[in-house]
Image (cartoon, rainbow, N blue to C red; front, side, top):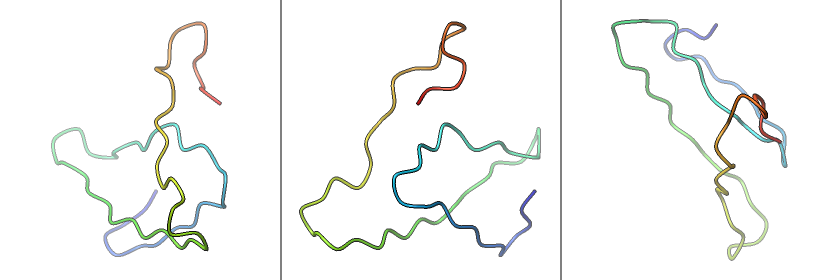
Length: 58
């Protein structure tokens, strides 16, 4: 679990399926910084919807 001000790292090429919010009543927000070598690169590629057949999309 992350607290306010914590940082985390996702390796290049990792599929981030979802982020859980520890609070049932308060919204969560994250700030994202992408470090890229190619300015023409696609930064975010949406994943297909998660279904019961594919609970953890690739």
